Length: 136
Image 1 (cartoon, rainbow, N blue to C red):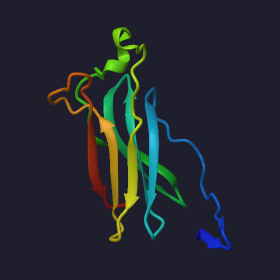
Image 2 (image 1 turned 45 degrees about the vertical axis):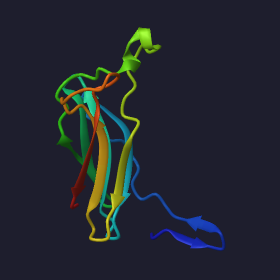
Image 3 (image 1 turned 135 degrees about the vertical axis):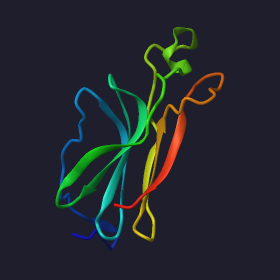
């Protein structure tokens, strides 16, 4: 069903609902973008025992739901931000608050997610932002 707006009321339905999970890994703060053809991407940060914080995505659609997890930009080192240090008021590092997924007019989807690129760090953190274009 196509969402509709009539007399100040939005009408839509959920076609597929479920979970996206990775074995012993975490998918954090996802964003979803869907193009006019109904093909979409879910953008998120993947973290866990086998992955340093990495920018990742999965395809989504009304027929199959969520597809496999793909790494868009692999994290190269552990998180080393100030929120993980007691001296700065932190105990457990905060991670993955920022993602985006937006459909472009050509049907591609732009995604963004936090990850650890391994380059020079700032005084308080070593994270970066991956931005990429995917054609579903």
